[in-house]
Length: 492
Image (cartoon, rainbow, N blue to C red; front, side):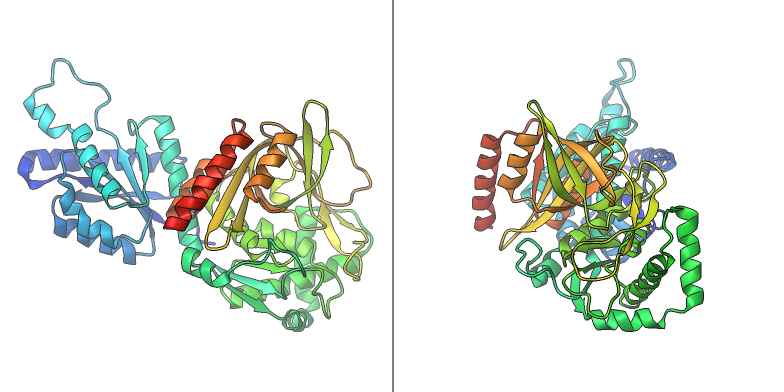
């Protein structure tokens, strides 16, 4: 997973030669000051790099070409300090292959009553320049983020930083490979999908590797390597079982899976309990530990969710709430509201745990294999989102729902899996209806760190449909939105 600090966002100011050297020097000084201020903010996800003042068609085209071919650059942020004639931007923006943000701001905060004169007006006319620049973005139908407000405002910076995280997610998506250990679970609809379209649209390479090859790799792992991995487990988790063979086997499986993933330059993978030929156990703690280190995972062959787990983890590096593969399992209905219990047989990421996870061994009940070692814990309270990427046939739809995770209202002492309980907004009954109406899958990514706006930014960059289910969503308005979207996407 690329580290945040290894990436850059390029900041480009727009102007023109009409104003003369003194004005252009002031534009450069102000732009450098803005970039330095933003870059010094401890919340900035990666380097915010000033790349100069653009004054001509040739300069725009040159900087865009540089951005396209520089792997460090995850996106471009533009701002027009003065008037910047928009025709000079056309050729360059036509070539742009990186995420694009238009920061509509100005250097000063307030209009200076005593100082304002024609010289001040000629220099400080971002309200003029950004409208010209905004027109060409609209005219060219560019996928762009428009952020408006003063560059020192905390809300502006928060919006900018979330866009930057989405831009990193775009970069990760363009270079993502997913390994499927075996096929998907038989007869399941939502885990199917067009892998060729996913590669064309999202950049993902999704390929199958036989479980037999994984078994061969498992058999190559040495006892010394297993002991070292189990030592990691003991340091990070609480050992709560005497069945050390099951724990050691999970360590062996984790090492083998990661070797294949590294060999194939893959950052996400899937498996299914229906395809475990030659294996003793379904991967449990093996998958959980890999997920905690940034790998994406999807059960039952769900390659889209596996990819989204990794992308969201990449977007949210440095944040501490956690993100995990998740599944809605069962509901707790109450007259006024209710709760959803999210869990899975084994594979929930410990990054969302409220306390130190316990290593336990219990029968699985399905799959016909030995009892696997897994991490058991409860998720922590906090605001979160669940996200589901589905194939609508001809297009992809990303659905995001707002939830509020809580401390479980019961102990569930006989449920030996990691679990999270949450309130669906606006309430359980309406939230279920909204999710099902939109076509949301049973597998999701639960994230305390990613926001709906962050994922909406990513969806805009990827040119896919986005649906946000909130406390204010009504089923009537949602149906209208989905019908309009169906029509619009068919016309594209």
